[in-house]
Image (cartoon, rainbow, N blue to C red; front, side, top):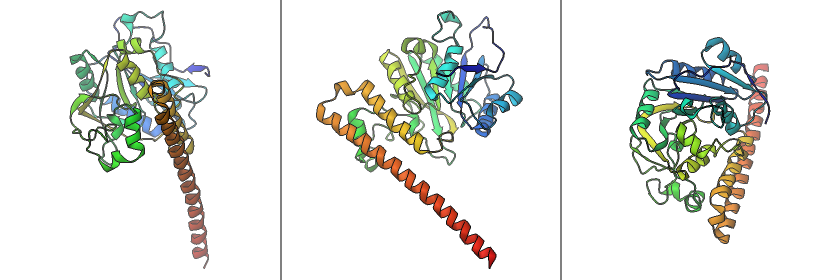
Length: 333
């Protein structure tokens, strides 16, 4: 891992642990990060907060913006883009997790992994902390997440992609029967959006984790560069005996995939994460025939998806160039 440079002054541990430590991993999303931090500033609560921005070697002035406009925010600047899991782990280690020298009683009660392309409603932080305070068996919780167009970010409440659940998604049954408990178990669309219920995982864009659950399960698995790390963490936390809940009574906004911009690299990362999660948690329990079918599905679907993206990208560039040439011709007449 690349060495990190801490841009903020070292913070001495307070006499009281913070209620909520917010970790925001940023990569070239300065404007969105500004909006996210402003929404945190506008939050209505009486919580002891600690906000850390980890910048993964952005080239858009993100770090300078944080220093200039949000001096109260701690800033960690990585020398390279080390990925989502490793970047968040840098902050969690700075908070004392995984550090034997920090007394357990001084660790944050909760850690919130928050994407820079999110905007919080004013009461969201207070409501989510109160929710987990009221339910001490919950290790992970997440709110209802809306896209800017008002639609639900379906990833905000999920079942684990078991071989059976993944098979139904791969062959399209989840799309054909979106309200089916059996065929669309992954996105749980048969449940009301404003419901409050246990799930397997919430989305990493807003993933609030109890400090004790982190101690039980460990930090994020850094083999996941981007995608899948939230599912893996939720799986390990559940395996450690904690519950994961979706709180549809609280809502935030998420501009999804702002950092990755749907690049072919991000799509490859997605399918690599899918394979890693399956290999880590299910492969040794899956029979030979189904295992080979899953491998074929991941490779086939991933290859087609990346090829389709590159085809559209190339055609899009060609169309733009053609349009530009056409405009010049018209202007020259």
